[in-house]
Amino acid sequence: MPSTPCDARIKQGYLFFSPDSSAALKPCLWCKRALAGGEMCYKHQFYGIDSHRCVQMTPTLRCNQRCLFCWRSFEHEVEVEAECPPETILAGVKKLQKKALAGYNAVLDNTVTDERWKEALNPRHVAISLSGEPTLYSRLPELVDLFNTNRYTTFVVSNGTNPDMISRCRPFQQYVSLDAPDVEIYEKTCRPMGDAEVFWDRIQESLGKLRAKRSAVRITLVAGVNDADPEGYARLLQDAGATFVEVKGYMYLGYSRNRLQRNNMPEHAQVRDFAKRIAAACDYTIRDENPLSRVVCMERV
Ligand code: SF4
Image 1 (cartoon, rainbow, N blue to C red):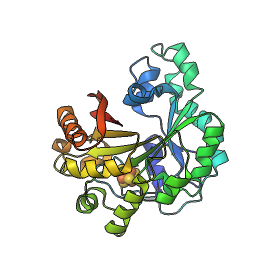
Image 2 (cartoon, rainbow, N blue to C red):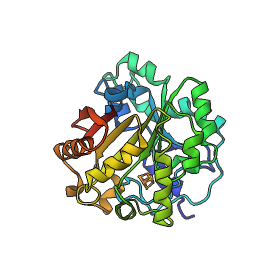
Image 3 (cartoon, rainbow, N blue to C red):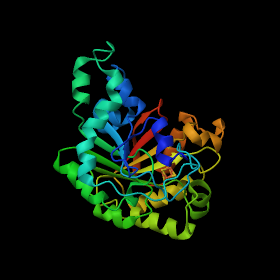
Image 4 (spheres, protein in one colour):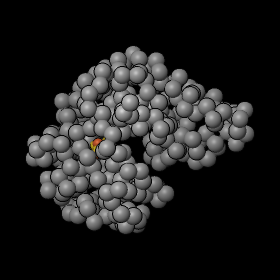
């Protein structure tokens, strides 16, 4: 029997919420590192999120872009699926997270602090950002509301191509990616599955919805690909008026290594310099940075 897209992901450590959907969860490395008593990811430093209490998940693995820097494989695409109901996802969060972290149990691994292990079994934050474009899941607003009602904080990370969904979702923090200063660089970097002009206009529309929310724009900077025209980025950011802007260096990881080279990964100093040039051209100031993750956080002044 031929393997399905989800079979390939199971081998990569994804756990699925239901057998006929691609809604999935996979703890990130920082979650495991924090559980082992180590340091937490930059979201802890910037926004106070505890990595070992954070669930990284997606309601769908489908996506309408093929970004050069994406760590996922484009050979195993999910085309059709039965959408997993929000209630099933909510019910599965703790169960699947526990299963995924089982090898890190304090009894089995004495580097894990007892306290962090107990806290990890009761996650408080959901990052809807694993892989795929979450706004392609038609019940995303309901899912976010359900998490909110159950007192999880939520980050929704979107590529911005579905502005209507950005309007309808009420996460703790809404992210929209901006990976180009203009449509030509956008088409080359993000490779949309449709008319680039139409997709680009939709992204601009999504950016326009951020001023009214706690929000962040994420720029994934790929050296030699989209690290041009900081003033162009600044103009778009100024119009959007998001609360935060994260400029993050591309990491040479996963399947992106088939599309890019190691030297497309900017050094932290380059990321910082680019962020400074953006900040000089709009009303944002550098608030914090994390050299290990090559990320700079800017805040609207
Ligand atoms: S939008 Fe996100 S999931 Fe889709 S290809 Fe780009 S990086 Fe990957």
